[in-house]
Amino acid sequence: MEIGFYIVTLCLDASMDDKTAELRDIFIEATGSDTVTESQAESPGSLTDSEHDVGGRLEELIGRMRERYAFQTAFDDDTLSQIVQAYYTEHTDREIAAELECEPQAIFDARLDLHLVSEADRNAEFDIEELRRLVVEDVPLAERAERLEITDETARHYSQILEADLRSTRANDRFRDEFAELLTDSDLTGQLARDARNDGLKDATEDIETDVSF
Image (spheres, rainbow, N blue to C red):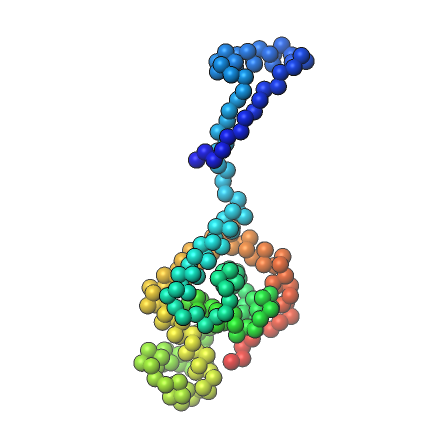
């Protein structure tokens, strides 16, 4: 696709040698002009262009989710876009929270609003499939905890995870799949990971242990 034109003017001066003059004369005779107009073809998009495009598409997806669901997070769409990108470059909630200067719980809540549940989130020392059944049946929280012999706090934490999974399932995992499609390109993901490190996301949190308390 043509996106612009530039004019290259042939420089003519007294010092021009015979060969150059001959070539000039041939050009003028063939074209009837002493200027060359070239179509400047659109160059392949740079990685920076790709990143900008991905950021915009992420915010569009997040905006659609915000219209459909009642978000708990107080983050704006731009910050949520950063959280999605950090999640797909395998940063922990604590690492992301350190960069954004907030609590890890806020990152956890934002992820669940965005249907971003990892396998690690589902790891539990009790029968999580039984909890899933209780969540689907809308059994009261205290009863869930009692049946599974866990604390109310633990029941609440894992119930939030399973509820996010259910919201995603009811949407045919559409949003989660679209995030993955945008952010699993190897070149782009690698660049995002490098950018995050350069921004100090990892350096600032090297000594922070993963938060496993609920």
